[in-house]
Image 1 (cartoon, rainbow, N blue to C red):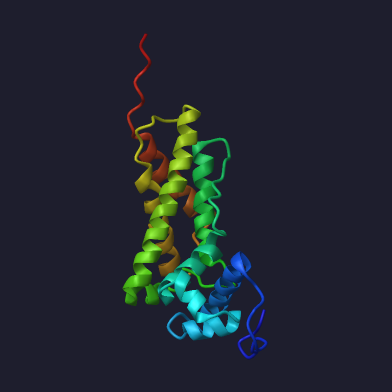
Image 2: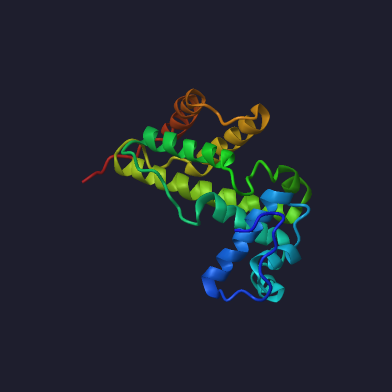
Amino acid sequence: MTTPNEHPPAGRSPLRGQPRVAAILDAAVELVAEIGYDRVTVDAIAKRARASKATMYRRWPTKAELIADALRRNADGGDLDVPDTGTLRGDLLATVSQIAESFAREGGPSLLGLTEAIRQDAGLRELVRSQIEARTRAVGAAIVERAVARGEMGASADHEIVLELAFGWLLTTTLLSGRMPGEDERTRLVDAGLVPLLRTAAPDPPDRD
């Protein structure tokens, strides 16, 4: 990894396929962390990754798409990792903690660090919004599916809104307080908000012969 005052070796990178994609995304992460979204250019990312701009533009037509992809990869590695603790409450507590910790993660562009860029760049804003929405809904669906299978709740719960609400509360609290919400705050969110909201769903009707 290079530092802000170092330059990568001259010449084209020998990497191909996924390793090249990873190198480009790593370069984007490093540069946004070092100099901020507004000052990062596709030229600078290409130079850091020793990649062709033509190659980059074929995969990411805009800087916003490239940074959004780097942000997603930096936050979750691209995998849907849904905690399975054996209970609805436990799964929600673990997931809320994961979300909160992602805001405090260092070493790359965080959502908090990109707040101003997201506000100003409509393209980046839409990409980040769609990523958050898709992920929270997928994780919420997995948690609810397990809870229904365990008999903890009915299948009619509106899982789509639950983690979106949690994400919004955690982001706002972190942004306005300057710190990650503590364990007591996260527990209150789950016990007073998320669990009751999910369990207001009507129970499934009993099977009839």
